[in-house]
Length: 429
Image (cartoon, rainbow, N blue to C red; front, side):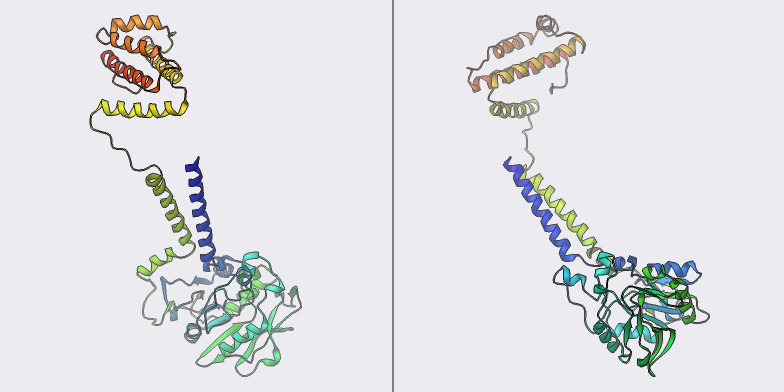
């Protein structure tokens, strides 16, 4: 009982350790973001279904900049100058406005060399975990202003429509529609697509780049494409921004540069490196590896610490096997406290086994008939077997344990010799 309790305590400790590791290493994976209602998987499938080749970013896929008609760049970071800090608790995790960190220099290079459609963020991480659209989960407009300032278009001001879903005259539908204010558009940015409430899509000329910026991600994300006339508007936006003669739209959710600068090389696959192996050490694969490690340690402990190493028997054939068998029987006898009764049952079982071997499984057991038959079949060993049987028969509750063990040992030896004479190979009856 004590060993079982110790086993349960150790198993519980491993389970708690795994739970803590899962909490520490848990987070919102990029795959989960893409497949979420505010992700880009819906746009990818919608474009391909409408004969627009859409390619999702992948670090093993090499495309040149000349292969891309348009880069769709969903921003899920409100601070391009620094990485978001690790959430301290569940409340901070739910209110986190950054779902995918992107460095400013990477962002600037992305929009400089390829025609790009930048999609501003709108929702905090709580939308992914709860699957709800709620005003409390909107990114504060003050943080959005800081993001526009980092991009370099601080003159733009975001406005949001009344709470709840809004549908414009053009069929655009969104929850608290996020738009650029008309009065703040100046020389840097010009409106491309407007609705009565404000500007949805603007074209901005900044530093050495010209790019388009979409104010509300709910027009192009998976959730938004299913609302109103958003899907048709999304197709119109994408088609109007694509370069002529190039058919590929690159949905870029990578935080690194994944396009080849040179246009001389054909499409190819990056060679696999040791960095690819590192992906299997990150969440959620890290949990699988930790679970496998914990299971291995439990099995190792049960095999070595609890039961100990395998017992080495002496190389003396039948004697070693008989000795081990008697030691096990002696241990059982000491635990029962009814040594004589257990020995009598043991002897009876042996005699029944002999009766089945000699007369067949359906023959009724008769001790006298069996004794006569054994005398005829095994004349050399029957006398010793009968003497050992008689000694065991005299065992009772007053017989010392040592005498009972000696009687059982003598019976086993005579039974083995009798079995050898009868031609039985097995001694495990």
